[in-house]
Length: 89
Image: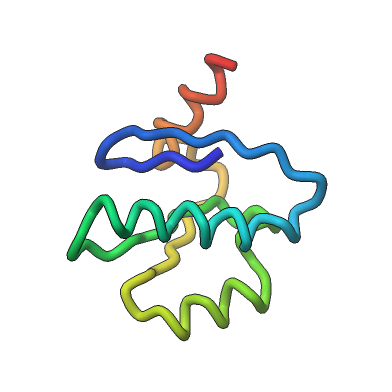
């Protein structure tokens, strides 16, 4: 599940494996970058394996306007929006 904190736009992606995440994230972030001209994109994740890979590291090194921040483990307060969205499914 990808949630834009600014607009609350939510995209739910069903993946066969976690290694597909990078491709879906790149497609999503390109679309958001066009919508939000001039803004940098910050990916906040909870240390899940889907956002930790060599491909993601190379992507963030290449694209300086993208940033990746990790949330503190076991603190649902930092991830409230996604938790509430997930409960509605």
